[in-house]
Amino acid sequence: MNMDQKVSEIMSTNVHSVKLTDNLHRAIRLIRKHKIRHLPVVDGKQIAGIISSTDLNRLTFGGIFDNQDSSDEAILEMLSIPQVMTSKPRTVNVNNTVTEVAEIFVKEGFHAMPVVENDVLAGIVTTTDVIKFMLGKK
Image (cartoon, rainbow, N blue to C red; front, side, top):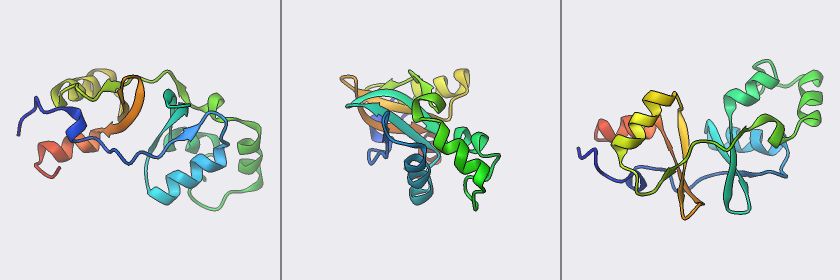
């Protein structure tokens, strides 16, 4: 295992994202459909934020992945993606090494980071990607 390998070799490139103007229902549908935990939020092609399944669960008292009740529905209608997302998330470049990414995860406590190339979303890397790489499964 070469920890100096580029993050571009272990990141997910088939990234699902939402736009600033999308609604929270779209974010929930993408998370459910693709069984993912993090969605980059884009403004054009640039990263504006990131929203996680945990962020959404906090809004709906943990019921987002079950049948929602009417109070959850009202909350989702009242709030927008920019109000819920983490703005200006930490990103890494496609040329960062796996070691650099792992150190950021450890020091800063993130579980996912958008990967950019020339300030444009190129992928997403998660702690799971790093663990799979270290186990030789990616």
